[in-house]
Length: 343
Image 1 (tube, one colour):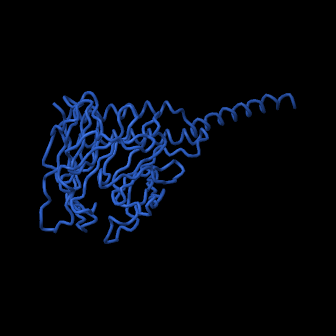
Image 2 (cartoon, rainbow, N blue to C red):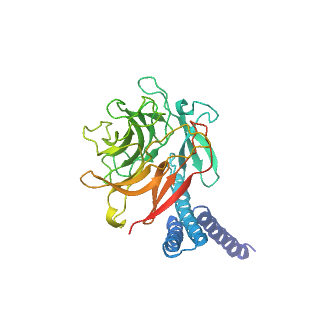
């Protein structure tokens, strides 16, 4: 009797081991499989955007590209978490928000950095920008960028705050602290930011307030892009001058026509606010390319208040908030996106 039970017990044990192995793979699948699927989705999406003219097909293709990115984020987040990295935040989207969106003086209210989980769409407050060394609240923030991997800026999220002219750094544990404050009389208040391709220098757009108030219009032609080291030291020589109010910026890929490798920056011009509901917004915003010698070249014009730039493949997308202001309480859903192809 015992001899007949042993083979059966061994069979059950082997089946149990195989089921456990299968369940382990379901819970912790191979990262490479997700990356292959995401790559396929991304290639199909890019091909659709570049080869199709039907607007519905283009939107569907963009959705595939975003889904591929989302799949990568989630896969890497699970991979890092199961690797024992407690601070893993891959797949999280970070935004700058007003702590009190109902406040009339929204530009003076300390900003909150929010973390959005695209998987669950849960929104949590990561940190509130603290006061700087001068005791001024961290407010008026509109731009944030992660430090490049492998650089001295890596592992931190950097945020600009125009009201107190301070840049902040946030670590994976959610701690926010002042990184550097800049002299408003010499440089202006900070706006957009990016990093040089080698990751050694932070580039920060600045604008000079025409009336001394960062919430007011900028002084025409006084805007700059300054250079800041990983130690928080501002270089004496600006990267470029002659702007009004530089906002979003990034370096173009090599294949972006004659502007490949150049720094591209959107300038909102007279970012005027408040604006009465019946008054149209000025169309004085521009997209510039910065040559190796530091000269500005107009690539596109006619924007209202362009703020952000991003690449989808070799297509540049510019976001324009138009008349959607918080400070002026003109909160209209009239922002738009513009896609630009280099010929």
